Image 1 (cartoon, rainbow, N blue to C red):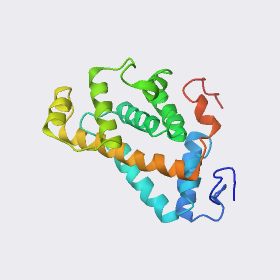
Image 2: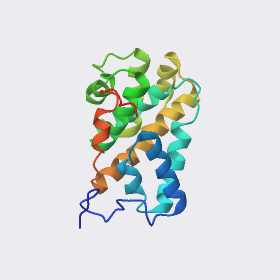
Image 3: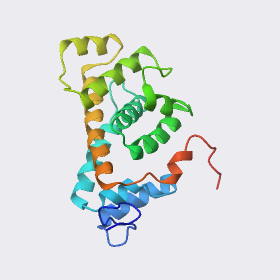
Image 4: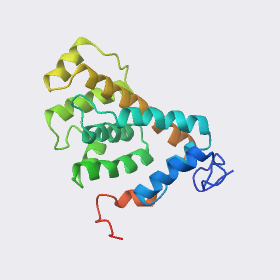
Length: 197
């Protein structure tokens, strides 16, 4: 069994036949991005999981955090996804990070090694903690709270950092499970000027 989105599962490759609310969500993304990200079609294989996944995604990524910025959220996603060897999420969220940061180099630098990337102490601590939560035992303790608060994060920010790392661990594993590839368009976003219509 194989199709262009998965060698293992018969995933939808178009929106026809999907529930209307999912079609509407995918069309809204297509209108904004200019293409349909493969992960939307992959998750549409199970409509209830699609709805739950994107409801939680939006609750985390679109929530206005105390001090955590959209750039910082995407840095967490890229660093976590790289450590989980999730090509799709590194490529897709690397593109978003390039757009938000207006820095064509940052995503690659964070993905390879955030400790050698030209990031602030705040960002190094944030990414150390995100990887600790996402890849190690991940128990919050007073030492981590002190270290994170010393660089300007609040307790609510700490929740956000941990939740984003944990959520994208799930996302990384689902993409790896299905073998879903990143769209070719993602590779150029934020590297090559977008063509004007």
